Image (cartoon, rainbow, N blue to C red; front, side):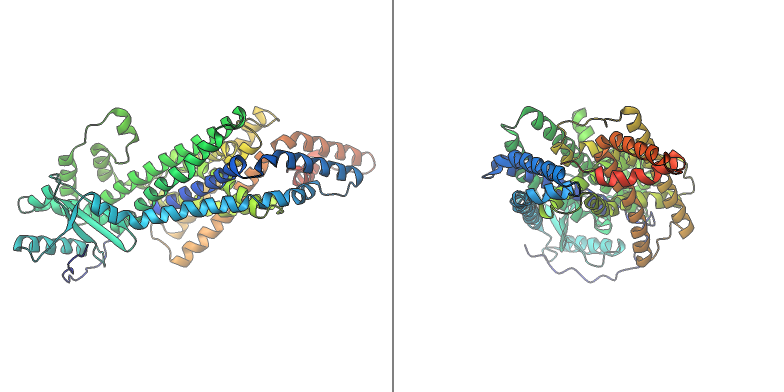
Length: 546
């Protein structure tokens, strides 16, 4: 639909970000997408086993290769059993890779189609019409005012402006994607332009703040991926589980339910946060705060059942007013946000492992976990590190602002690993390590302590750098890489530890037996030192289970 060329308005100096840093919505979105694609890899692997020709011989192939590896080990102790097993199953595993890659590619293609078509569908579905300033003087004055607001918001490229004639509401909203952004004004708001210009200014600046925050495209991508995942992810998985053994179906279904809940809640958090971010940014501009509060109060809340209010994607009037009065709440990274980041990281890591095994199944099992940790840690650092930077920027930050996010991330990693989709291949339901609940709790506490130290280090680095002043792009990149490498070591160690839990008792027995044998013929030193050196070495060779 053609839009008249906007009048030329000089662009003033760009208003500063009220937080000194971006809202972080992009980083959370990247983490969410990583988890979604990781789960898709597992789903398409499951679909292959359920429907592909010849897939029913998978169990027989695995059993034959495991038996062959055992016989080879009896003949020659020098045989590397994991490598032998992987080489034996390589031909069968190669047939899975095209299914998984084609499924992920189809999901992305359909989401891309939805993303491209979204603004056109939005215009047609809501019967929107572009403003025509040449029609009458009143419309021309409104269009000039709108572009003055564009300049006030610091946008160098104005969006398209549309009118929704079928709505008498006194509201506006922004929509669109990269290269195609628009703001819609309802007929009720346009009618009140002359009587209440302050309200129109506040509401339009709120929508333009969405464009300044660059979250409108993220909203469109979130919706597009969600709609694409339903027919190409959820439905194929449900079809694949029909006829599956009850134990396996329960394990896969539980993990799928956790993932879908994570996707929904993360999407809800992102969309709610973008509304709060637009309110805070618009309220920071000259003369907008009180008018925005008045407009928020006048809008009121649409009555919904309590469950729909709790699960809604749009914050309530009271929540919006509270954020405008206390904007620092928007820039705190809390327990639940980091908990979701931990769950998403484990889901994403498990999906990467599945893709790695299907496309490069002869890769070393331990190295594949290091590679998975390197892939997912930058997104986790972006969420946690940005929160640490904001914590250091606030003058009233407290110890809990560093401890609670670290504990949330730790709990997410602890619960996320047994619930990760690749764990469902070995165990139908999450279970504690065979070494017992006490040992599992001890390792979880150690992980939490390490992550508290990591959060403290990130906050101290931000304070030393001079937060809230954002460093240059090169500085961001250097700090991001350094923090990602550190966190990848933590995540990879946790993945190896949890995946090798069943071996820990055997490894500990072997290490103690070796220490006693050496001590009989030569000084072996204290057991704790011997264990610190040899326990990781034996774990390195025993951590993989066919």
